[in-house]
Image 1 (cartoon, rainbow, N blue to C red):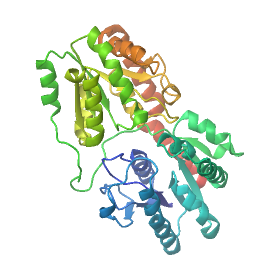
Image 2: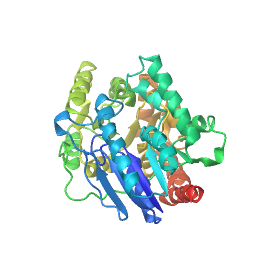
Image 3: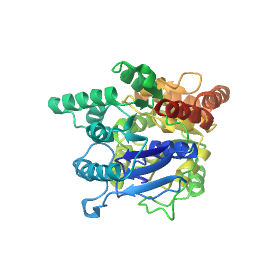
Image 4: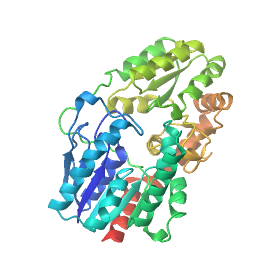
Length: 396
């Protein structure tokens, strides 16, 4: 089988790396699908046998593509459209695999080129407008909702990445057998082609943890990810005065974020009187981020809004460390009290669960064991591969 994957993202980039695109391509290629992957000029090539990466122009003077909707993405998608047309003219594909808003491009071209369409729905696009502050125009939201419904109806197969999104999608299609819930649940290291070009900070995991220990820190809490507002960093920092008062040997490490975001949250920590127990590393290479995860005592996901399960949750289930997460739908569609320490998204309750995860050894042991069992049964690479098999059988 031959597939054209359209991924309008900076593939592969340290700024909001599109992990789902990588793993979909990796597993499909392992199953014999020959893939042309069309993406933005920004990013680093990766090594996946049977996958050819095709890039549109870079336009470095316009800056980097940021997470979420933007005028720059709209401009770059114009080139994605015409590159797609050129590829469809020159090559015959068994199916086109469109990630997120690329489905709108595929929707326009499907009647002309008569290909089978797989819509990889990572989120509800109208909800994205809300999450990233683009929700002021009701007309824009209605337009996106109408396009999204048309894409769901027209696609030959629809992939969603979490139960809430699956429920949303299946409520809008008549043939529910064309829907596949395939969570972004595998996390093996990405095979980069050559040296990664990155603005990430080079830091030493051991040096930072050593400094924490020297300063009296016995337990290290960790947040690793982007520092967008919906990720709940405000909630996490607002919880720290309670944690500090309860256990003055507990420290927080925040990994990720642009220099501007790091400075904002560093100032917030100072205002809350917890800057002495918080360390902000900024962006770091993937290997270093994983090093922090391996050596931290407690992992956190303080997200405060959104429907999608954070991609990192699946890795955190399998890493053998207690996870403290907010009790909101994006978490609870995967996480339960038996596999994580769940807290209401308010500082007092979140702080209480942070302290419990750092000190209640019996609860930690049971929770961690349950989490690893859940991952092995439902989200492991074997389970992921079986879900991809079902999708490919559908579109053959």
